[in-house]
Image 1 (cartoon, helix red, strand yellow):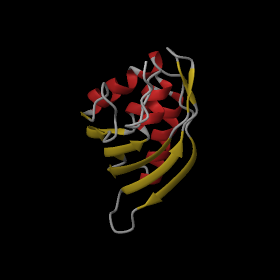
Image 2 (cartoon, helix red, strand yellow):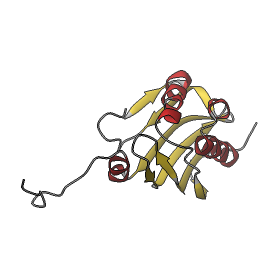
Image 3 (cartoon, one colour):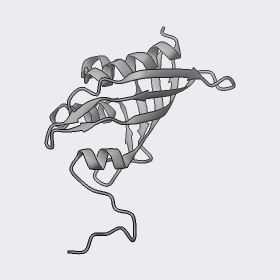
Image 4 (tube, rainbow, N blue to C red):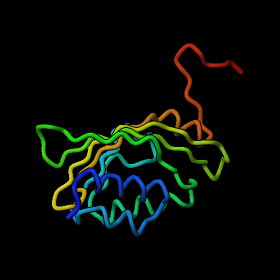
Length: 144
């Protein structure tokens, strides 16, 4: 059985490489993924190994490998199996050929050597802009 730090590193390495087989091996059957800051068009919650793996299976058609780096992985002292990870990505969106470089903070629950729950927090504006969209602050609109 793997310790929680190792499981989270394996997850980050697998997502970073878009290695779907290795990724599926990090999940418990009942895994839940929460993406609280996901922009419209992306799910905010996905449940079950098949569902979460299916979400990631669509990524190779949208983005190059994310090449996660600069890991900082910390155990939560009073919650065994709970991990907080900070990391960054360096990829390109295929449809726009724009760079996608984001930073993330995620919280994981690891039980029995597998991820049972995780939430990923990222800058949705960075994603929207990489996809070719724009975000304009009120009062900053450009008149036609």
